[in-house]
Amino acid sequence: MQQLIAPTSELIRTVGQFLGKELGKVNQTEIETKALNSLVSYVDKAAEQQLVEGCSQILPEAGFITEEDTIIDSAEKEWRWIIDPLDGTTNFLHQLPFFSISVALQHHQKTVMGFVYEVNQDELFYAWKGGGAWLNEKAIQVTPTLSMADSLIATGFPYYDFDKTTAYLKMLEQVMKGTRGVRRLGSAALDLAYTACGRFDAYFEYSLAPWDVAAGAFLVQEAGGIVTDFEGETDYIFGRSIMASNPHLAERMLSLLKESGLDV
Image (cartoon, rainbow, N blue to C red; front, side, top):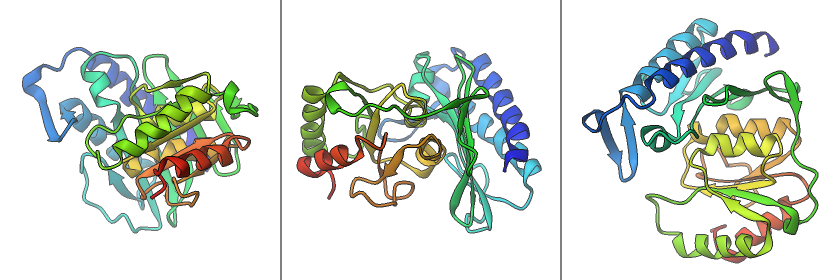
């Protein structure tokens, strides 16, 4: 795995340079609406094409799961890449500097390598199985925070799946009252990367796709954190709900999710 870090990192940084050059150049006629509040432009598609082509050269035998369906390939192969070329598309289109590239590699459906690249600050978060988590060649870890009262929590607002809105607002009320604050920045991959490096103490969100969370969840785990779905189980990549935290706060976060009704 460690041997794949360098070429994959170089590829991701190159695609990140492309994103940076295109920032502010997309006009309204070039934006498509895939679903309610789900936007895409030529930038997402071109970036994904570059990532797929590059990853195919790095590991030719691998399959793909991609957000923009650049490649229709067997996701059941021994190796597979899970790619989000632009996590935070709405931020990007509004020129808000909080978006990322997310790339994970799985072997037999288990994540073994993950990258999240924040373009604007040139921050590359990466990890490989058993190798710990890193930010630009510096080792990172989750926070040692013991108390919810001392914690900063990240989340994502539901923007199309509203059947759990009441339960979500109950959860939000609890963390608003019982923590140092709540942040909603608009890129799940970066929320997880920031949890991995200790900028956030915990994170929760629902209605997500595999490409949103696969790499970031792996970063948190390799940084010593806990990642589950809202039920406390392991179906957080395909199960559409995720909770990530340092080990001290995980039990309390899951308890709050249950109390609010988000765990059903």
